[in-house]
Structure formats: structure tokens, C-alpha cells
Length: 228
Image (cartoon, rainbow, N blue to C red; front, side, top):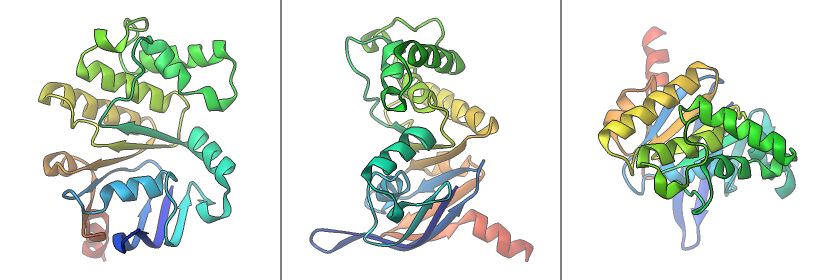
């Protein structure tokens, strides 16, 4: 699902946010990319999510070499294959949960009636079937994040990228969101969670630890070496 080879990202001023990173994530995995602020994990998310191009190296997502795709094709790849969940919910105020999710499907080319039906199904999936008409100010923090997750999965992406998905939530709501992400993974979605929280990372099957733009530890690699 994800294949990075020697990926470097250098920002103006010569800051190397990623320094020769190589990583493989198989379809159906549930993994954490963990590290402190400035470790490069958010840049990693932007590169994996095709929101940013690398300075050097190769990025392949779901079999597609990102370097071979123009902006229109990259947008289509994101719309069809990648879902994003961020710490800040990015919900439109004054808009119902249903339409917040349906609007996330605008680039799919579906008719409005189909978008709204798909949105209702996604909200049912995350346990918000009774909150379709509620606006963001009428929802709790945990419910807002569930709406954001519904928006991310309404397009039935193969890959879900979650950036600090529990960072703005209390512990109870955060645990509920993590359980939901595990459920989505058990149904076949590849889920990668970017977090600085070691306890969240340690609760997942795979941990990729970053520091200063490098992958310094990968539990999958450690298990492979141990079984060799």
C-alpha cells in the first residue's frame, strides 16, 4: 500500500524534514508513526498522502508512483484511495453532520443524492446515525471527530491517514476514536496513525519511530530480524 524509498524532503533554508526514509506498509496493516515534535512524522503524512512531493526518492501509493502523476491525477488518487483525519476536525459551521460528510465527496463525481446516501451510511458506520441533522456546535468533541472519520471513509478509501486523531479529545472520547479506527482496520482499511503519544503507538500492532527526519526504529523490522 505504501512504499517509500530513500525519501528526502528539504524545506527552504535547508531544513531536512525527511532524510532518506524508506518504509513499506502492507495492505490491511494498522501502524503508528510516532515521534516528538519536529521528528518529521507530519511531513511523512503529507508525503504519504500525496499532499506534498518529496525533494528526492520514490513514493508509491497503492501501486502508483507519485512522480508519474500530475496534479489532477494526484487529486483523483486522494479522492479515490486516501482518507484523512486530522486533530482539528475541520467541520463547516452551520452545516449538518450529513452535509459535512457529503461535501467531502464533491470530487468523486457522484450526484448529490448519492453523496448524501453514502454520507448517511458512513455516519451510521461510526455510530452517529441519530445525529445526521446536528451541526458541529451541537456535537461533543468525540462526535465531531467521528464525523471527521465518517467524512474520511465515506469514499471507501483503501488507506486512512490519521494525524493526532485523539489530540483534541478527553481520554474517554479518545479511546472511543481509537476503537473505531481499529474496527475500520479490521474491516480491511489500511490505517496509519501519526502521533506523539507513545501509549497510543504501543497499543498498535506496528510502531515506526522517527527522530530528526529518520526512521530510528520499526517494530516490523525488529520482528523480522528476530524470526530470521
